Amino acid sequence: MSGDIDRKGLAPRFWDRKPLNKLSDKEWEALCDGCGKCCLNKLEDEETGEVALTRVACRLLDDATCLCSQYEIRHQFVPECIVLRPSNIEKNLYWMPETCAYKLLWNKQPLPEWHPLVSGRADSVHEAGISMQGRTVSEFDIADEDWEDHIIEEPI
Ligand code: SF4
Ligand code: SF4
Image 1 (cartoon, protein in one colour):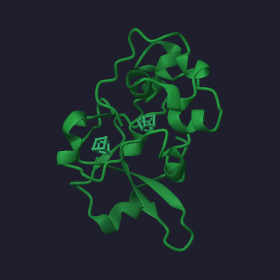
Image 2: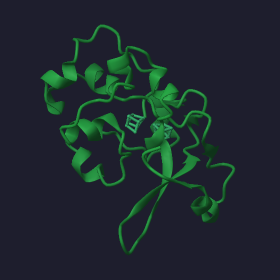
Image 3: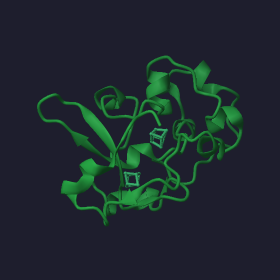
Image 4: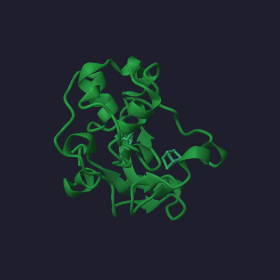
C-alpha cells in the first residue's frame, strides 16, 4: 500500500509496546510490509460475501517493487484507494490479506520473522515469497470478466 517505506529511526519493537491507535504516522506507515497484496483487485461473491484475491493489480502498483508508484498523489488517479486507519481496520478486515501486518496486529498476532521491521531488511518479504513481486498482471491488460481466471490462494 505504501510508497517508499521509511523504517529508520523507530523505537525497537514499537508495535509490541503501543496500541495501533497510539502510533505516530511514521510508525503506522512503517508497519506496512510492502507485500503489495492490498493493491490487487478482488472479486466478491454477492450472495456469500466471500472475497477472492486476484493477481490483477491496480494500475499504479509497481510489480518489481510491490510499491505504489504514485503513493502521495494516488487519489488523483485511483480515488477509491482506501486510506487505512485504526478507525477503519475493522470494517476492512474481511478483504485484507491474511499476512497483512495491520490485520495481524489487530488480531493480536505477532509480526512474522520475514516482516522488514523484524528482519531489518526490506527484501525479506520478497525472499520469503510473501509479496506479489513479479507475480501480478496489470488491470490494463485483463478485461474485468476475465479476472476470475486470475484468482490466487491466500496466504501465498
Ligand atoms: S497488505 Fe498490508 S502489509 Fe501488505 S502492502 Fe498492503 S497494507 Fe502493506
Ligand atoms: S493507488 Fe493502487 S497501487 Fe496505489 S496504494 Fe492504492 S491500490 Fe495500491
